Amino acid sequence: MTDNPYQQNRGNKDASITNPHGRGEIPFVESGKVVPAGTDGPFLIGDAMTGGYGRGPDILHSCTIAVNPGEIAVIVGPNGAGKSTAMKAIFGMLNVRSGSVRLAGEDITALSPQDRVVKGMGFVPQVRNIFPSMTVEENLEMGAFIRRDEIKSTMEQVYHLFPILKDKRNQAAGELSGGQRQQVAVGRALMTKPKVLMLDEPTAGVSPIVMDELFDRIIEVSRTGIPILMVEQNARQALEIADRGYVLVQGRNAHTGTGKELLADPEVRRSFLGG
Image (cartoon, rainbow, N blue to C red):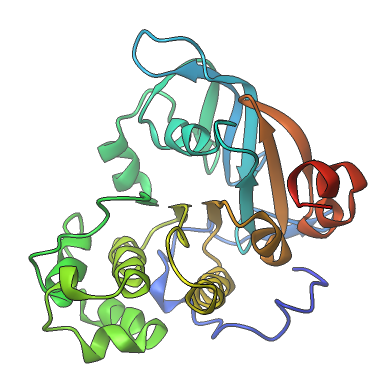
C-alpha cells in the first residue's frame, strides 16, 4: 500500500469488522492503486464539487476529493480553507450545486446523509459525536441502528481495537477523557460495518500522546480494507500516515499527491507545514 515506514506491519488486517461488500466485491490493483472491481474510478469521490450552505455563497470551488479501499486520504489546509465543508459535502450536509459524489460507482449526490449511511458511509463529526448520558456500550449499540443482523461480533472487534472501551463499557461516555470519547465515536461508526469511514478532526483537543494512539488505531482500521477520509489540523502528522493528501485553499485544490510527496514539496512545507 505504501513505503511509509510508519505504516509498515501496522494493524491487525482483520476484515471481520468491515462490511463484506464494502470494497466493491474484490478489489484489484491497477497502476499501483486499489480500485473496486466493476467501477471506473475511485471507490469514493467528491468530483469537482462546487457549493455551500443553504442559499449562501459557494465555499467549495470545483473541489475533488477521492479515496480507495485500504487507503487513508487526508484533507489539510489553513483555517477557513473549506476542509470540513468538503467532508460535509461528500456526506450530503450541504448543497452541491455542481459536480457529483459517487460511492462504488453509484451517483449518490441527491441522497440525504441518512441514506448515505445506509449505503455504507460512516461519518464521525468533530463535535457532538457521542451520547454523553449513555454508557459506552449503549453508544456502540446506537451505532448499529441500521443493522438487522447480529452485532455482538462487531462489538467485540471494536473492543479489540479500543481495549479501554471494553473496560469502561458500563460507564457514561460523557465521563470519559477526550481521547476516549473519540474512540467511542469512531467505534460507533464502525458498528454500522461501513464501506468507508469519514473522520472530521479526530484528534482535535487531545494531547500529542493521545493523537499518536488515535492515528495508530486509524491505521489499524485502514488495514482491514476500509477506506478512510480524514480532515486533520495536525497536517504534518496526518500526511505521515496518508496514502494520499489534499491541500485545500479557499475551497479549491491547491496541492494533491501522496502523503510522502506533499511532505517533500517545498511549497507545501513552506506554506502549510512551517518550513
